[in-house]
Image (cartoon, rainbow, N blue to C red; front, top):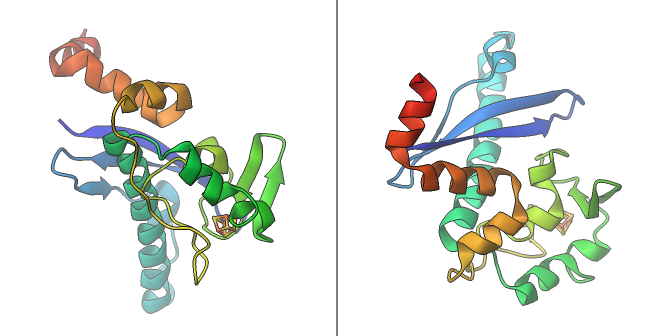
Amino acid sequence: MPHKFRYHWTGDDGVSRSKTIVLHDDGGIAFAPTKAQRRMPTGDPAQREAKLAAHRAKLASYAAAEASLFSQGPVSDAVFAARTEPDGCGSCERRRESPRDPIGFCGECGCGTAIRAALTIKGRMPAATCPLDPPRWGAAEGEGAGALDRLKQLGGVAANLIDLVSRGPKRRAKEQHG
Ligand code: SF4
């Protein structure tokens, strides 16, 4: 049974957008074009395709990171600390401070300032990586055991996915169709 969640981000133009991402049971990830993309001017096809490809890559990367949090559980406190303390985001000039998150947001990855992109949450996702070249930190294993309880603490999308899964397909269908 595929799981859907909504991804919100702010583009380089400052406009907030969102997209539905579908995680399939076999690990596949799919998403549909946003209204903004469908309205995108046809101008230079190569340029448009390059923009779309870059956008798709960002979404796929984000979806993979969210999926890893769901399937593996969050990374350990030690990994999280290494990612976010002085050798990681803590001293990075691309980090953006925010009153919405104690660590802030990454100004390099293009994920914007939606709460799921906050480094407090993203730094816990096993498949998340720093976008710098070379990266300051990379993918790591999730803790696995007890992951669902830890995910509930992290809230947001992960908790929504747990809720969807724990209710089961029959109950979800009943809720959808009354
Ligand atoms: S993820 Fe990388 S680029 Fe972004 S703030 Fe952290 S260290 Fe900097």
